[in-house]
Every structure is written in C-alpha cells, then in structure tokens.
Amino acid sequence: MVEAFDHAAGSLARHVPGGATGFRGVLLHIHVAPAASYEMEELAEAECVAGRGIVGDRYHVGTGTYSPKPDTREVTLIEQEALDALSRNDPPLQRGPIALAPGDHRRNLTVRGVPLNHLVGRRFRVGEVILRGGRLNFPCKYLEELLGLPVYLPLYNRSGLNCGIERGGVIRPGDGIELLNDVPA
Image (cartoon, rainbow, N blue to C red):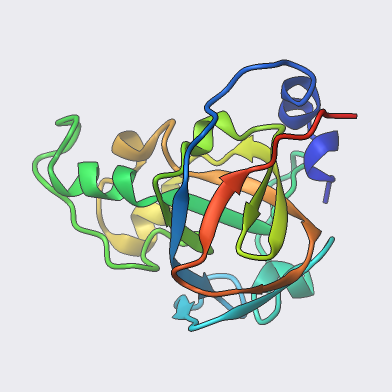
C-alpha cells in the first residue's frame, strides 16, 4: 500500500492550488466487506483507523484484492450524484437506467454534495475523521461481472476516490463533510 499523498496523483495534486472549495457534503451510507467478493454490509457507525482503514473491512485487515500498481485504499468513496445519474441513464451509455442499491458499488462511503474528483491531493473531514485524497477510483470489469450489469462505461471517471485516513475516529451517516483549508506541506 502507498500513502495517499505518496501516490503519483495525490503527490502532484497536493501542491497545485485550485479544485472545488466551499462545499458542504454529507455522509449517506457506510459499507464494509470482510473479504474480497463478500457482500457489502451496511453499518450504522464505523471506526476508522489511521493508516489502516475501517474496522471490519477487508482493507483494514489487508485481505482486499489489490491491483499490482501502488495504491492507497484505506477507505473508498463514491458520490450519490453519480449513482443517481446512472439510474437516469445519464449519459446514455448503456441500454437503459441502472439502479444500484447502496453497497452494490463496492465503495465504503456513499456521499452527497462532495466533488470527489476535486479532492485528489486534498485533506477533508468526514465527521471527526480526516481523510487524504489519493487517486480517483476507476470501475473494473470485475464489478460488472459481480453485478451482472453494464456499469463499467457509465461509471468511468466518476467511480469515486481512494483515500488514506490521517486522523481516525468514528463516523456515522449524517456526518458533515468539508474541505480542510490548510496549506499543503
């Protein structure tokens, strides 16, 4: 595993000013899977451990499925807005609308009002937890096989963000999400 700010995308982006600011998002859902291919379990709250992941998740214990490329994957996020667009067939990249239930997308946190593509190389707070945006997550053909749905193309470039956990703590659905306005080191 690679620290979020040590990943090529995160290390470059954290020294460049810009990106979305002033947003106020909210955490909608928390999901974990104890091992690769297991069904995602929804949690009412989760303990996030700095440098490790969410307690009970496969990446926390190191049994996740890893790409051979260096990565950070302590916690993964996806925007509810991307899922809503998929359910509207927007853009029309498949035969029709695809509705994914929470957890089907295989990301840990589902958020609303958070511009994840702008958080590469940025620090932000989810409740009391501080995350570091590492790299954008891209869909994989495995997800299509697992779901039996053509989600690869419509989720391309909006499949979420891989993050590191800088400061751990407990998170719950309803927690606010905000950018931290500190100067990167």
